[in-house]
Image (cartoon, rainbow, N blue to C red; front, side):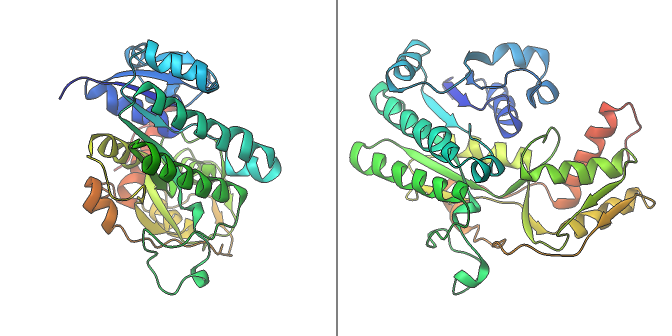
Length: 319
């Protein structure tokens, strides 16, 4: 495969740093835009050599003209756009859904078009969908109508429509990946941080309380998320402009039971309650169009996250 130069926005964050690791291992050149280059997930995920190889070229996604200049200057072939505020942020600060989601996404699309970038792969979300009762049947088809319950999900829905427009009108090859609940080593922010508190709490002997312990979510291990991005970058033009990718459906209570296999006396309080969002999605289109299927089961992913935390703390691994 011919070496490419890939821009990864949010490339030092949780999913982004794992994506950078995969791309560097494949021989790609990587440039990064990330607003938090220090004290981010990359400190744990990337080696010193990998961190040096992923060149930081900016902290914020600029407007169209300066971004087009950056893409040309660094001869960027493809873009992975992962940078985004968290859903918790957009709910408390609605302007961030526009200023930090919609506006940068438009800049990415327009600059990629002008600079001749061959493909844009970006992070959408299963948040574009709503509650199980909003749909006639489960699992949710890939092309099911969007019924988001949050500003974050609504912004991602609009971003999908914007991407469709750029493909239809200008021929820009775009593909959004709808990520579910992504967990694993180095998850430090956002609503999904409860996964880290739960798993690392047991691994390190810390008390942990989790609410809504019966909520069903699609748990996707972070290396599967990174692999999905790599497959999307390598795939030819897909018929879908967005694909739902995932892992394994479970609850916090299920994960707590897994953790007690290794830590029978773990001080975990899983309170009852359940959220109402859809957790069941049709994986067929993602497999058919980019060849993605999850490879890490929930027990495997939980154990890998446990042992990453124990290594970091100088404790013996468990098996």
